[in-house]
Length: 333
Image (tube, rainbow, N blue to C red; front, top):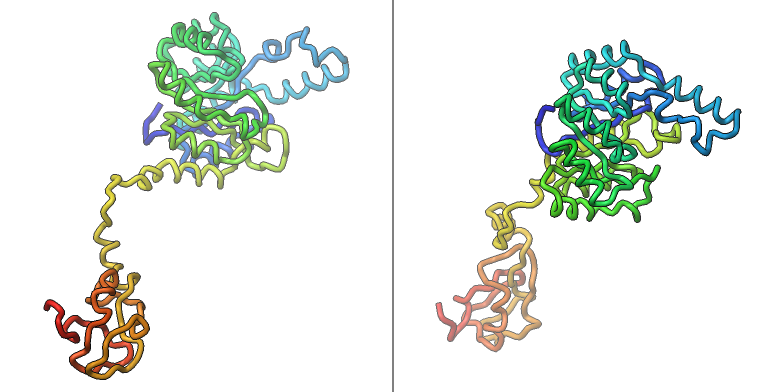
């Protein structure tokens, strides 16, 4: 995994290619143009994710429909290799989520840059042990998992990047629980990131500001298509997210209370000075009504206006002349 900057931003294409290799390549291109660090696809065996006893598949028509969709989204070995080579030419990292031994073997053969373990598989210790043996950088999501389950997975995998994740699609912003990132940082000795399922990119920005090392955001070519597309970022969202990740630290500054030189130069323009409100004759005793506080700043500091109240002019002055201590008797010069 290359480290151009942190956070490492993954455009999670997942299944949004809809089984079309041209769409998949377009999404890779979009990710490259947005400045993302990596793309990721989901590689699975239909039988693994669609077991015969899965409750919502009891109705025959529904079951056949889902099998048809799963078959459409299936990525062949040839396609994995083609997409990996395409990504390499485009100079973007290429990773895959795996769900079983066979899908792991397939992506290892394609020489992926990293492997992702989905939240659903954090307790599949057999799969985790196989990933560990292959010595490929690993990222694991922690949705639906408690602390002991996360620690157990880390122990098996070695030193994965752990992503805070809420397994809701889409995830309501009230359920995003971004403070869990800080909790995971305190409890674990590994890099912590965020896998986002909220709509929009605000949660990702907040996670970046909280110090997330990796950001994973679902990625699409058309957010209006519903389903997984609706909670995804498109190219223009991703451009904004990447730019934010590069520049957000600039907003912090050094914390100095005193103004910088650029600000000091603006004092003359933005601050106000003390001026005469009318033409006044020699011998006039100054009252508050004789004065105007206006921009720009002049040599008399307006916070000292009380010092001249009741003082007597020793010369005549014109309306809008700047107040000057040399105009008064009994003032220190």
